[in-house]
Amino acid sequence: MFFQLLYDIIVLLTLGLVGWFLLARLRMPAAEILGPVLVIGAMRAFQVDLPASPAFLFPIAQIIIGIFVGSMLTRETVRELKPMALSVLIIVAWALSIIFIIGFFLDSYTVLDLYTAMLSASMGGLPEITIIALA
Image 1 (tube, rainbow, N blue to C red):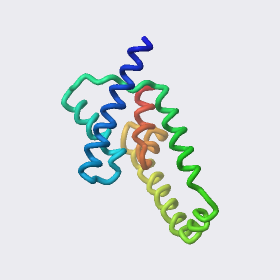
Image 2 (image 1 turned 30 degrees about the horizontal axis):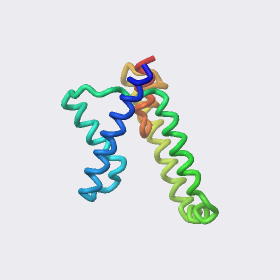
Image 3 (image 1 turned 30 degrees about the vertical axis):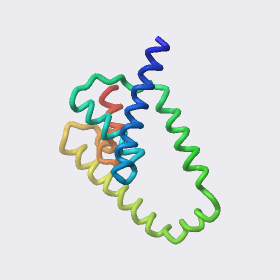
Image 4 (image 1 turned 45 degrees about the horizontal axis):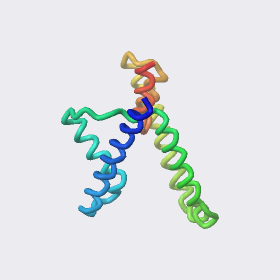
């Protein structure tokens, strides 16, 4: 059991590193993110039998990303954000209003309930819709 899990992780990490290396050699932007997505996604599209990612890896990856992003915040970066405050408020107001308008439209004219319609109209709402569909 443990060795199978270790083998699965090593296979996925190796494929991810190969993708990163290939796209880095081609000087593609964000090779460390797009490379693994491209290689593993292409292999899954061609129905190559790959192991699934273990569930415990997702929270670990989120914690590492949170530490990385949090460690980049300084007083200077917060000062650099102040001139963008009006633009950010306009974009947030626009995004929220679009979510509510499209969400209420979907609720009124489709079989979706209000919560599902709001989540499906939100930016990046696909994970939430997937969770609802699984539930």
